[in-house]
Length: 43
Image 1 (cartoon, rainbow, N blue to C red):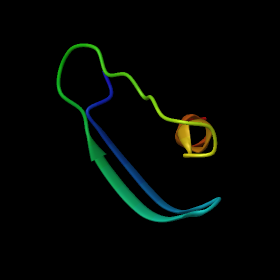
Image 2: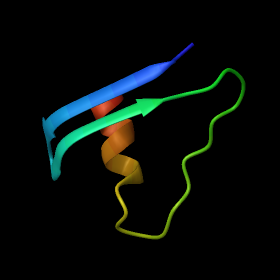
Image 3: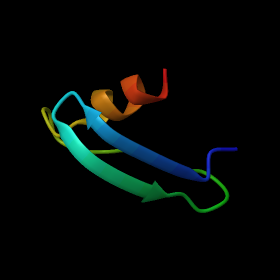
Image 4: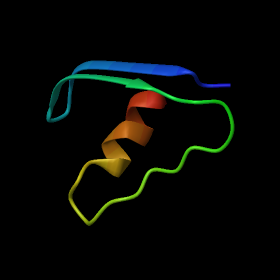
């Protein structure tokens, strides 16, 4: 299970820290807000 995500200097993201709660987490947002960048950072 993914509980924390830290991204630094990836694509347009300087630094980002996300903590996820247990259960289902959903990424939503309008076009161009960075959802795909977060998914690419996992890969």
